[in-house]
Length: 347
Image (cartoon, rainbow, N blue to C red; front, side):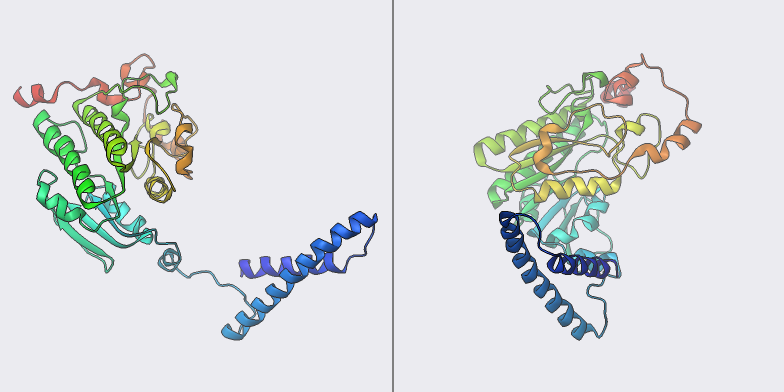
């Protein structure tokens, strides 16, 4: 009804202008005549559309809103035939399988565990990222890869090497061999964790990893640079800070990325006309912005959520942090305080 009302208002406005007396100089009248002719044509077209829609629906409403989110999603443009999502059973991957559904005819879901509740537009590709033949099979016939698989936190070196470094190399090599032209990768703030907040870095700041996990993210960002420069595979690297249902502590009041904004970020990375090798910081539209995202403006990511809605509750249940503590003053947060994971494993 809102759309129909807006169109009726436009019709009344155009009609009023067409019927208005002609005043002013001859030049002004000539210009006005030109635009009145244009509006008359538009008016005739709108009236015809209204008549046709009314005849089809038997109603005065000229436009109707979809009655659910699924109907709205089907009206979006499908940019791809098939998108592969790795880590599809994880916290973010499970959100992406739903959020990215409108972008492709088919969503292929890959993880090391079984994928539950497959939908009609989904297919499973269960495999280890270290199994290159299986990864290559998963990438066959794919138009784009959303790579969210791998170790999600600081882990022993052997696991980092196999899951994050070898696994990501296999993804890029499979993309090269299968003709995939774009990869969207879940990088992390921990690739630049030792930069201080007040430095307000942009995407050209050097890597300063705060962990073996962060080091693996640096490797994949550079791996993507090689595959763009040498093989023409585009990549967007999402330096995700803290993506959870809601902020859990005071740090997340500036680092939080809502699930919906995460979907918006990946969507923008997939539909942007050209990305080359792009790094973008993944945060919602929080009041405090310690990094500069301007070098990713061509992606078209516009976060809509903000941690401010949670500020009062978070501050009520947590104490102010020490501003001199490394975990407070550096982007990496509590990862800064972690020791070497292999020491912890053998202790």
